[in-house]
Length: 143
Image (tube, rainbow, N blue to C red; front, side, top):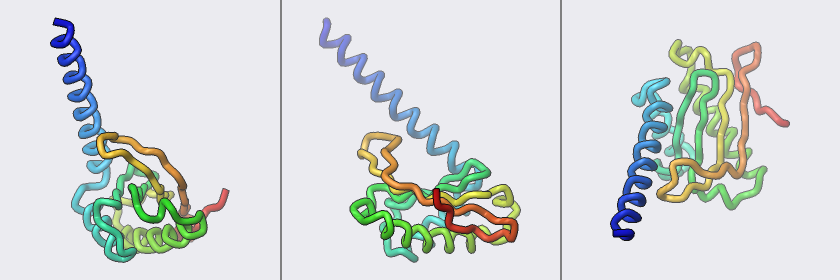
């Protein structure tokens, strides 16, 4: 009897995790349209020579986040990640162009993340930000 109860509790917990992960992913993508973000993801992956599954792009309107998930750059230095992030930000800024859909984006952030396969969230190892200046250009931001 106790085994059945424990099995049921574990099953319910796993289902809750799966539902939460899918809701989070859908919400983030719907803000800018999966087709546009998907094209950006493909372009970024090709430009930096990464596997598509290691690049995720989401936006909440004001901040566009490019997550490099479990990438080989996680083992690199901060300067190495900065160099790659500059390439990514340049490409993303060019992709944004004059699209009114992204008119509210004021920051491009590149996060280098470690994530377990079953976990919806991961640990951010490093973050590199580029902020839109008065001239409309995204500039590297140092803190």
